[in-house]
Length: 336
Image (cartoon, rainbow, N blue to C red; front, side, top):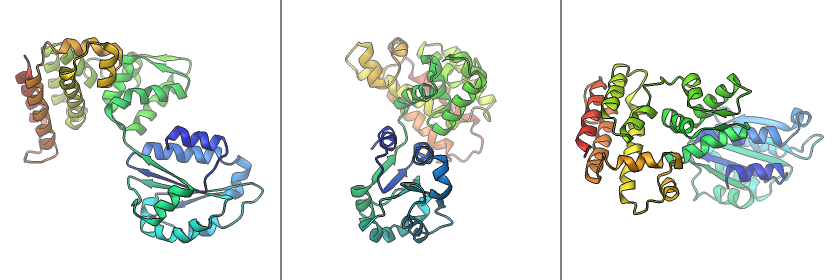
């Protein structure tokens, strides 16, 4: 079940006795947890019917003891168990309760970056009488729609360029993405549509030296400009860590590689297959002039090797500045 589907279920007051929120992406688990806390009970009802437990500090027995109590002056009581990954070994103790749940109690287990084994009886029971939500990291082609959704929730909109700048600068750190967008809107509450200038101003991007401008220069065959940007990254490596640069470059060249295999020239189809806004399709098509299939294949392999080196695999130097030079050389070799 999706985040929106569970929210709709809560809004309809169609509660299940138990929810298991688990997976690698903490952002969606936190988002759903807050939605439970804000929408299941009124503020008056929370005084006697809202309990929070922590996996490091409490046991399953303590959670179930609370769940067996009846709510006071309310139809339901809400029990949220945070950091429940520390209780996974105790989940077998849920089995007896799940055979005869207290219908007036709602238990929400928040399992961060881990999962309950699907072979466990408790997992099967929860799946049958409750809801299991698996929070998965977003793929890179899902980032732009996600950015859109964050703005829409606040009744705002964002330009295609600004959207990509955010996606490429912040990447898949969804909590940071949400924080930066809220900070931006808080600074300009009257602004309804946000452009790239707002990203530069509030997210701390250098107007000329950022990952978006690097990718843009490469797409347009502006190799002197891209070399200048990479050199700036190298000289200011603390502000532009190579671990943040490599994923953006890998995604760019991987999309160009996929584009070479596509047999269509339809902009909508290309945008969908590559996971880019239609606004940027012509830039990608134009880049085929500068990078061929063989060169891109070699370059993608080089970037993977450089990524391993940046993590200390087969690379003894503590100074990663030399790796920026390797990126530049690999790009130069890949050009037509």
